[in-house]
Image (cartoon, rainbow, N blue to C red):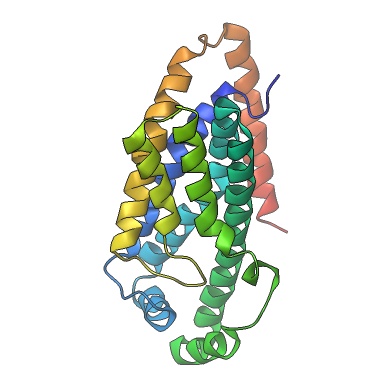
Length: 227
């Protein structure tokens, strides 16, 4: 059995780009971190929803990328997949710093939290040296998809635009964010629909097994928030 299988990969190809589009929710606010923290203070639900959706999209995309790499099946695709996956790890790290800054804003207020973030914004860490993967990975993977004829020119270019998404801590939304998320939807969502349609329909046994597993995972998720 391949991992991720068709159900996981197909669902991720659809859900990943759609969730990533959550970055558009923060488009009314200015791009840099002082304005992002101010926006959090004034519109906490909207800003948290935007950042949470973007984080979830990056996490889900690992399965989409893994499925696409398997589908292309070339050395270039493998290299592109590695680079993109490391880039997704880097964005997840950035999201953790975002969350810490949000918590600081709630505890200290906007001005003190902004000063705190500004004081450590340029600090070096592991992903400082790996930030290039966030951009380069999508370009390499798009080239691999086009070279192997897995995607045509339009969808290969659309996939490459994901490398244009702004990167870093507490970054807002700009025109390139719209281009990158739209491009990713154009490239991956139709493939996800196709993958799911090609799969055999779930059997009664599959459904009866999936329901308690889903409920169990949901219960574990709730328990995880308690400790």
